[in-house]
Length: 243
View (cartoon, rainbow, N blue to C red):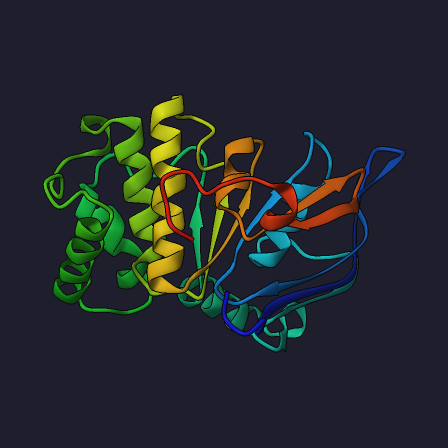
């Protein structure tokens, strides 16, 4: 982790949802600093608020009260155009269900974010090929998602998240649809990319194995920050990777 530089900060964040006559506080006063280059895992039971908090850091949801800062900017005071620019250029998203376009090849899926931000198709495709090689899929460039295994599809999703060289990668249950062996490979790949690319990785997860590669672990319960711990405080080892 680099010099404890803060890349994102939540200050007294709440999120209220109204369902009929019932009011639900998904978050209730969460404050947290997130550091550049760290691997942060957000854990908690279903309905705890971890996904809501995760989505706010990624500008996919907004607080009812409180503030989210990203790279020293008050994220939700920015115009929507600037928020969209941040989502496209500074944040990469990895989803549990992969969210790949089924009629597009691996390289086409990975090139899509670059094309959407205005890169020439040829340039975007060349960059996509390099990123796919980085995640070990240089031999699967022209395969469609249904021609790939679950682990390979998740690698394509990781490459797509990396292609615009984001500062932060948000991984939502990245091992949730994978078998145990493949899930461990994805965990180790994310850790390697964090170390080699100095990208901040924030994952919302139920997978306890994620603790072993995390610099810090945050537990959220009932919409509140229950605990924050360094990996060294949890007495776990990084499986197969030198930290």
